[in-house]
Length: 337
Image (cartoon, rainbow, N blue to C red; front, side):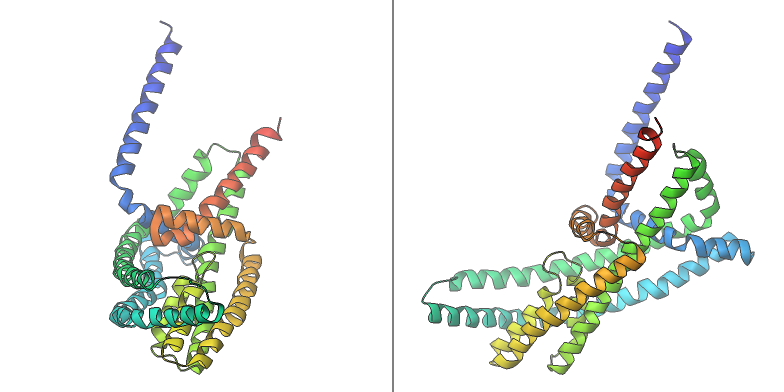
């Protein structure tokens, strides 16, 4: 048998072994995928500050990585922990008042049924919806706990990525099977994608939460902090968004017999919060990364399904990265022919 055939068989066997071990390890460590993706996202965001500290300020990689890690903890982990504390403390309140929400919904349905002489939904189904709502809340808390654990693991991985920042950049530059021009383009546009999603989506959620909190304050909503956090979280959900927050608030008003404030809440949520959210979202996407809204929408749906909470940010990056790789492939292998 020729030596070339022996080498090819050995190479194919080695590829098969690598693929097998890769699939095995991925299956065993899939719980850490969100943490790794989060660390990779923050590594992209902090790569330039890391280079500035090590090259310009002559800091050691360990000191620079530790400093940036502490910065990440203060800016990201502490606010998320505070939000988790608010949600955790108010879960009992939400469960207790879920009956009020369903009572408000029942009142609206009864009024519509009496007015138009039709049957929209039975009392038994409304009761089932209330039980479903109450059952979902503990799962939300459990998901929040998992997210905090993921965040700790993410910081652990991030430290080692930052400490080896130069080595990672050099490895990618020399081993990615593309021309240097396209490799640099890939890195540059990947940075833009991460900035657009890792900064744009949370910034939009925070903006929506603040706008919602202003309306809650003037309408005299109880536990504004809790509903603000709920508004921030739900605003990242495609299609329905923050309506999952302000509609229950309006229903509580209706259940308490305050139809005026309930109507105002619905109008404020649909017009003010809805319009400002769309304007702010498109504006920040244009300035940061010009990400198409469909990429964000389908990316969030895909990301949450695959990666959990961190998928809200990383899902759109995956879809946008796929489109970018297709463009680079065409430029690298098709246009060059």
